[in-house]
Length: 226
Image (cartoon, rainbow, N blue to C red; front, side, top):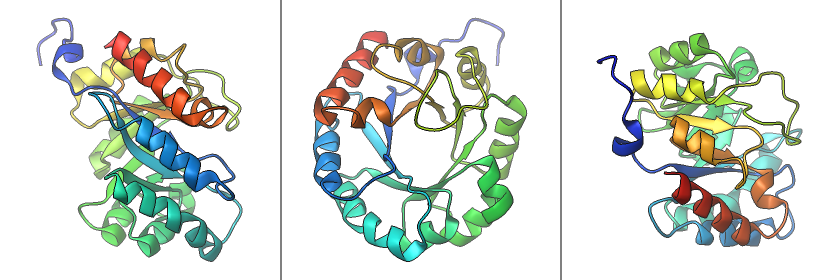
């Protein structure tokens, strides 16, 4: 690797969206998910993955809620990722699992997830604003690292704030994809795209309002920035 200015904006794959579910995925949410995904299937910038992130229920209830959503993703060849739980991901035969730092302390780390879910599973790790945690995740065999929060968000309490330069640092040194998360919307996405985010993890900016229109706005913002 030379010390010349990075050129990843010309060589890397187009930035894609990584949708994260709201807390409530009952009622008409399956229909809303289908609309959002269908709005993001065209063009270079598309929805690559959907994360099932539901708290405070047991695996039996979670599996029932997940089933129609997983089917919707499978029909569109979009990865279905389970947040937090290796056991639920295994039960659902999900495409992967996303592990937070606290989750790994309680439920198992990247190596355990790989043993349980197999070599083809997509395993992501929250690394906050830490280069050290990202390096550890990569060495442990993670398929992607997630940095954030980049902006204020009401989705969850923010304890760590990341700067776009962290994405650029990662891109210049490593091939493992990086995900930007935290308060991202169509108005503020551009700096993260230009900094090197392979994926933008989005929740409220899609589900708070017309999900299809919100996805289109995000796609347009990414296209304009990249």
